[in-house]
Length: 90
Image (tube, rainbow, N blue to C red; front, top):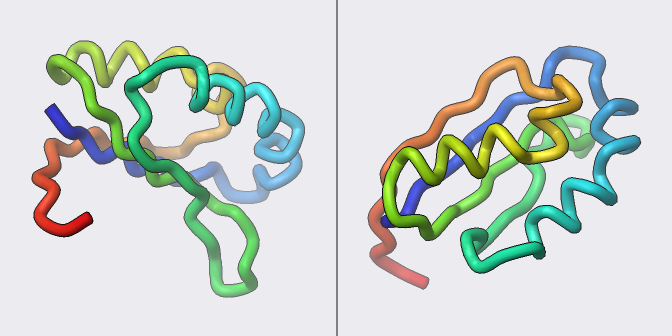
């Protein structure tokens, strides 16, 4: 099951994102769940959120993965959405 994780950072949290980025990237690479990942950018080109495509068994696994993300554990996100997704191209 493919799930799009779309997360928006809390306002003014760029330094929190940068501090936790090495642990977050390590987490992204730690298992087979992550199919694609990258930061969302604001108008100035600064990181302001995340887009991650997960390939998991079910929504519960996606929720658990999201809760254990170092960014989430650090309190970076203002909002997180987990949306079932259907790959058409790519």
